[in-house]
Image (tube, rainbow, N blue to C red):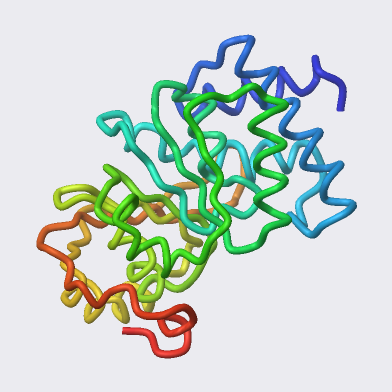
Length: 239
């Protein structure tokens, strides 16, 4: 897809979720898309490789929560993978401070390449297990918001995300359409970890039948020091 076609498609879709993009931001997204398709030939980053699909299912999907981070300054993106939703959110909100966390070094190398080639400041990519980061005083309880997309079931996800967010901060989880069982199964984890679901929003991505659910969880009481448990435990033995 050439730049002009890309610009038209991205701008049109972004406006439908009430986001206006500058020329510089459009250029950053174009570089990002090209890097994603190039690197995807070497390492498995995404099954979505058609440009219009990348725009809708990666970029626009990530930006659906942009309005929910406006009052926040510091954001941690858990299990960032190819950078979603963290990098699109940072491009559109350049004043925010972002940390991207992923457990695979090859993906972190890709994230660093995107940060460099797109000339994005105020963002760091960390190669680490989030269970370990959650006990590091540099990161524990230091973020206004934690985000995640397609990482794990909600009861597992909360143990990854809640330790990093400040008391009074929030976790924003981008999920698929069928999450009723996950929400029900997360009640114990919410109680233990001091979380409270404050918002559940079901949306359709623009001009498509792609359904999404956005779950917002507030940190309402202090997290016990034992959480998160050691790496692998949240997945093998969910709360």
